[in-house]
Length: 243
Image (cartoon, rainbow, N blue to C red; front, side):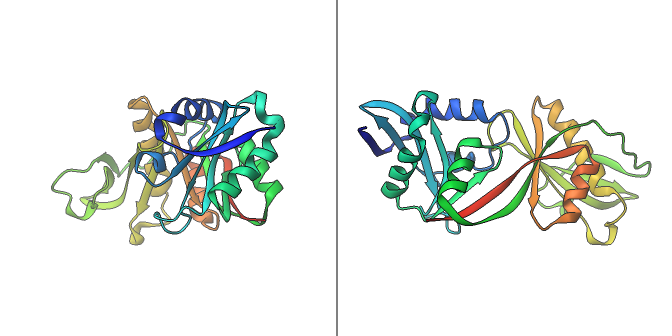
């Protein structure tokens, strides 16, 4: 079978990326790599016909291109998935593979063609609407007067003190909004983290966005915080060494 792998411009793979994101149907945490120029893309053809694409980026340094993080084939060509993946890896020279566990195709390649597989992050999607209460706390947008709020969009205020900050990152695949938050150290352990996540979820839906989140695999406190706010685990960020 005549398999060809070549570097491609963003427009060459745009339609394939639309199909990939539609099939994934979840937040893709590396989506912004294409928008920011952090990735190189490759077009796959089989017997001269476009069959899919892949993308690589730098696992530690953005200027490197040592990691496959995106891989998609049209269904008629998936019988050749291993051959095409190995040809892609040889062409791009990647030494790592990173995949979301809810990305079935690239996860299959990771488990088939890498070693030393480890989970680096936990991925979350919204599950239930919670009714957490903090009667003495106000959730509001950050203003220019809130100097200690940094570059955050929202905060929790208690008796004139900022107890937590957070916001929504919208540079992921539409319609998802990635929730981030931080509770000031003196106020941790009082439920403010879950409360601000709950309110950020409301704000995401008000913007016609779907809330999502992630945390480091070892951060059990953040995991419990997100779960108390009604989010549930939907996958893991996995990484393996190419063999």
